[in-house]
Length: 471
Image (cartoon, rainbow, N blue to C red):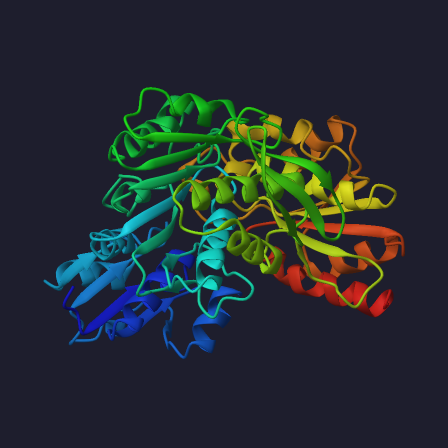
């Protein structure tokens, strides 16, 4: 890869920004552009002193750029975006970030964390544990992670850890991104149906996973969840080594003697053999399962000792937006649970109720991903909020609304109420904040579910509770 300057169109995307950082660490000069961006990625780029233009214009493209990298976004189509159109007509090399990662991983011992959920946390855990043990891995994480200077790194070690996304690589390449990453080892957390706008049926969704696992070399390793039926089924008939894990899978890697709390500890087991007792500050049984899967990968591959593993798990500070406490100075905990899919939302709700069983749970949700906005998924609102006392439903995101049968906010609220939940619509952020404040009690717990920014409420709600109910 002999680039001296790369221009990223859509640079504030998580994968795009991570790839830009990898190239810059290799000495490549970086420029870019984006619009409608928001923290934490936009702040991260600024902190890393990567300047980029706000808005898309053909003039943004430097004449001396060797390569132009274009993100996978509905706004980045040549018929509607003059900068993309200019890039395609420029005669310069045009690539997706998945293409660049294909080149970067060609000679590495790759570990790809894939699945419908849990892959960001598992990728970050793998990278953190290896880094703490001075293995200096390369890594590419699709989310900002507490404790990391950057969410990507080009290391000197032989291991390259990547978050493997099943979404198409670009607007001109329908192959799943993870098929470009030269996978030699895969940690598969799940394969429940997601991204129904791209994969209309579950069979469509499973197809790239089958291709990914079928490409693993005979000396590679698949670590697969045995508790998620589709992930387990995908493990059949492969030529590589396979290790299963689950929360309570007594025959394989699992957890025993769990003590849950603000800090959770448990015995890591391989069948009937106790390997080591681990502790974590991450909340929820889903994160215990993530830790078991990551542990299985690192120990089966003999990349770490159990003692090194324990040091990593004990000090891991969590992925931003994944059960992250946003109100440390308030008696009312406000957590962000991300919740970009049904399974992610349920995991966050269950984890919150486990820690605060006697508090009222107030949920503020923004149907931001197409998974939540697609009419075919409306049945998810029938039971996703089980355990909540009150639900505020923000207006659905409009980006890409023309690509599918979009639900209206009124339809979502009506369906949720029909399932006997106390739900109401919120729109204008200041009014929404006042309505939340009027009903908020000192013994509540608040959970924010969005992959967007809730019109700024993602910052304003924690400020509200810290002002109204300080510690």
